Structures are given as C-alpha cells and as structure tokens.
Length: 248
Image (tube, rainbow, N blue to C red; front, top):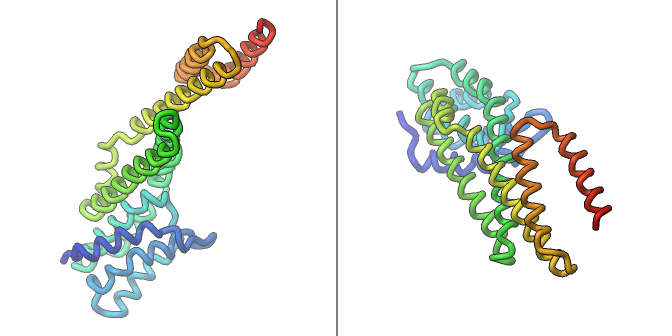
C-alpha cells in the first residue's frame, strides 16, 4: 500500500499551515490533523478506523514549524505500515513524541538563529549595490533554502521513518549553522565599514576609520571564538571609545 503522489503533495502543502490553528492547550495539534487528513481515506476505508487514527494524534503536538515536515512524513511512514498490519499504533505515537523536542531545537538553531540572520545580513550588505532590490535577495534565498529543506524533510521522513535522524546527522547541521552565523557577522561587519566610510566622508573624517572598524570587528569575532568573555570585550570597547574621544 502506497499513498498516491497527489495525496502526498496535498499533505506536504498543508504542512505550511501547521501553525494556523495554534492554541495554548493543544499547540500545533489542529494543524497536524489538518495536514494528515488527506491520507485517511486511502489508508483506512472504514469510518471507525479513520476516527481511531485521528484520535491517535489528538495529544498536544509542538515542534519547529519547518521541521514538522519530517514528523508528518514519518507519521505517514508508520501509518502506512499500520494499515498493512505490519506495525502498532505505539510506533506512530513513539516516533512523534520522540522527535518533537530534538527537531524543535535543531530547527530553531538553524533557521531562526543562523539562516535568517545570515540571509538578512547579506541582503542588507547588498543595499549599496542593489538598492531597493536588495530585500529580494533575502526573500528569495531564505525561502529557497527553507522550502527545499521542508520538502526534503517530508520525503525523507515518509521514506525512512525514524531513520530520518541518521539522514539529518549526515547533513552536519551544526557545522552549517556555525558557518551561517559567521557569514552573518561578516556581512554585518562589511555593512558597518561601508556606513563608517560613507558617513565619515560626509563629515570630513579620515578614510581609515572604516578600516579600523573592520579590524576591530574581526578581532572581536576571533576573541569570541577563543572563549574570551563578552563582558571583557564590552569593557575593552568602552575603553577604546574613551581613548578615541580624548584624542580626537
């Protein structure tokens, strides 16, 4: 037994609305049920079987809205097995409850704390070159990555079930998160230099001000990477500002 491609496509699209029915009590449960609904007629011909399947997913559900695609796909993997008589209802519930937390943390770290800041910073840094078209870089790049990732998570979950965890580990998401955060810092630093040079030129300041800002920014990033406490950097920056103010 396999779900038709059109049904899988409908379910994948519905995962985009998994937070539309969010509530403090059930969280994303209503969105999950909405996403899974097209599968029930194909898996369970009897009405009572469908009702039982829906009752399995009435417990509170909450994870990262993008990473939820992997769980929805995995639920379908186990529901298909259950409909064939090859598994148990506990397999479905265990899979869902086990992955909700880890995928929420992984999604937050990659999408919210890495990809969005990086694409946003790059978009801002391109303002001097692209002007008002620079925000399109952010919108297109971010959504290409996030939609492609959602699709991959859904397909992988549907094909492999709990083995989606092993597939995710092969992607080395923490490494890419670190690289994206470095890209965000570099883009923000480059924009800071451009602003310093632009406003410095308007105010009659010397052009090496931008270079000095860049050097200080890179140095601060390297010191943070070497576990130097941020408080030390803060006081150091304040001391440098005081000295610069006294000299100039």
